[in-house]
Amino acid sequence: MFKFVHHVRFLVHDRDAMVEYIESNFGMKPDRLQVYENRGMKNAIYKVGPTSFEITEPLDPNSAMGRFLDQQGPGVYHLAWGVDDIRQVAQDLSANGNQMRGEGGITQSADGYLTANIDPASSLGLTFQLAEG
Image (cartoon, rainbow, N blue to C red; front, side):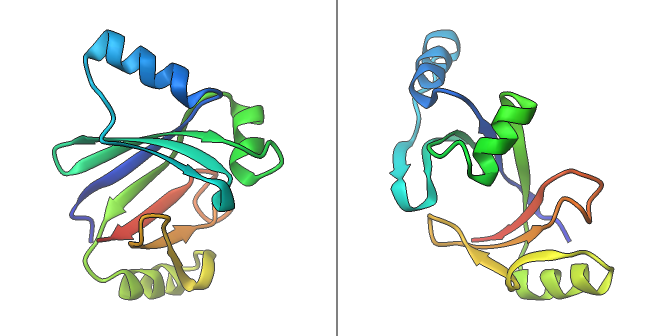
């Protein structure tokens, strides 16, 4: 089912401070910096082989990411697995008893690829995402 780790999203209090930390300590610059006002987040996207890691600062403390950051502190928010047929994967996960987020279990990312998001109540509290594209 899983082809590769598509991306890992880390939540932080200050995206720009983390970008500076990563550059000064690891010599890495982000591939792109993004602000998604409508999604309530600021991102720094880094590519390492086929995998991206995203440094995300929630802009709304009352959003799901804002509440997660407040309760859990900085760290991994979710892991996204790369898959080929996202619609089939979402159907299979639903058939196995997982509650999925979004219409038919499918959502579209800010970058335009499709995702299937398992509700953490179904996955023992961990947030798993699957991504196609």
